[in-house]
Image 1 (cartoon, rainbow, N blue to C red):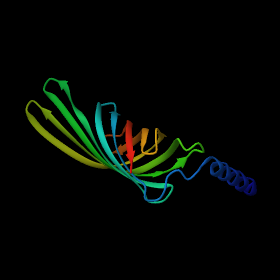
Image 2: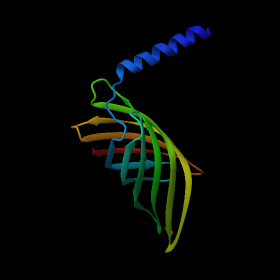
Image 3: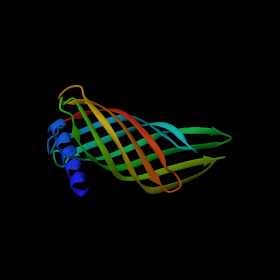
Image 4: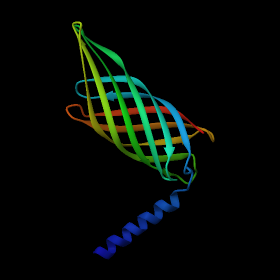
Length: 170
């Protein structure tokens, strides 16, 4: 049974190797902007974000990012807004045609929520973890579209965050 499992794993690794090419290079950098939507049972809102990407190796990329979620008025004097800072690692799987790329991601997050109720303002920040994945479509040698979903695991405030953006490679 163990030998069969080893053969299956080896076959899967070979198949992924055939599908993948080295489209990203060590040292490549990119910067981009994206629209985000975060949702939970308590709070859902849209926002804008910025990201910077740096390929540490041909297949491992670091990505710090910042998201600003637009203030939302819940009525009755209750208003909140949110920001988050992320430090994620991507493992890149470029597809053979070199226009598509997909990646799983994992990382750290810091979220700050400010609440204003009847003129009284309070804020709280918490650290958490990100897990998710995304994909890119290369429009040209320097421009790409990006779609990503990550799940933020933050004490008392877990939520998925969807992102759609564009980046410029340099």
